[in-house]
Image (cartoon, rainbow, N blue to C red; front, side, top):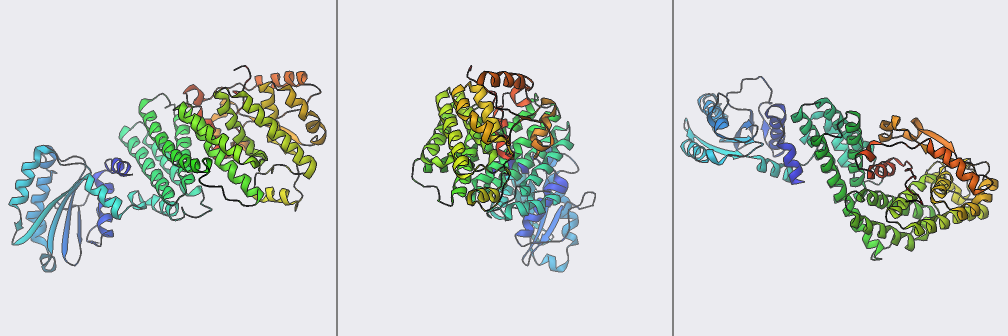
Length: 533
């Protein structure tokens, strides 16, 4: 976090940003502010004046490194500010103020150049007393400010006032079980708007990106510290999703500067995922056993874990294939150890299986895809036949419990799971599986619509928001035909209508699709699971 905080502080403006931050730091250290920094006020060399019982503190604040020009090359130079304090401010002190120790701090979000070291030392040594009052002059550079922030002040006040309440909530509730994504989503959305407002002003753009970087990673760090690494992953995902949407809408995907920030956000995403994978590794190696709740909670927890791993594994295909293999092997290890994965808790849980199939398909592990499809579809078919149980259509835990306990009357009239499995069977050219399921799907689930969602690239920007599956795209019902060849011909016609290419494919970031689908609970496309590839 030190480097992230340092980068952010280095971009703060002298007035109304750095001065406010420093004022807050010393206020939290027990000082009382005698004046509030305000642009335009005559200050006689002093940007902020504070005091406690024993000390009068005068802050001279500058932006950037203190070089020869900033030291003594203009009317606003450091030396001129110090001389003005000596000539005006000190002579204007009250009797009570004169009884206190007087400390002057030259503070900057840069460093002190080696070229002015002798000038600085000579000035400090020659100015230890003004008008009979002992004076102590100190320098506070960016590393000192970062140290103060990390040790005493690591909270929401690093940011502008409109962020304070949002950051407070995002950090305060982070160790609670029902932590709401809205806490951090509002922060990221606000930061994204500031990036938009910066336009082509590179300095403002950098500052807005840096602020989002710091705010998001602060939340991630807090989450990880309390053992909730999943929140850190989700925050990182949301930053990438919203930033990509901005780049897409503003035609910035080919701009090197904008992509550099994307790379930084992605490195954070990788870091928190690696922390999570390490924890899951202890489960795969049987050092830790997954907690045993009721049957529905067990399946929900397992699919949650598989979702994080599968999404990250697909992301790694563009970054580090060897690492992607490790993640995939963890997934297979969990599936082999906890076979209750086969009964998906929710209808939308098919999205996790598709992510796993995409990973297996990339490494040409076709037989394993077929094995998983057969095992899961046959199990779901038997659960319905024997117990009238099925994955919850509304994707809520309460509904899944109702179905499991047979305590409600949940209507089963639409299923994306069966629609997507039919689509996968088509792409895999699996006649045997189709014929095994044909009667069940055609007769016993005749009143259940087997649906697939297709999105056009003309509506791509909707994909980066929640509720895209409700607000855009087209839902298509997949019909079961009398024989596999007829089914294939019908499917040939359907899939040819939806062969669009999206921005994340053009710019070699196919893992973004999985990230979005995991975050929003969308269902990824299956067109890349192809027997011909």
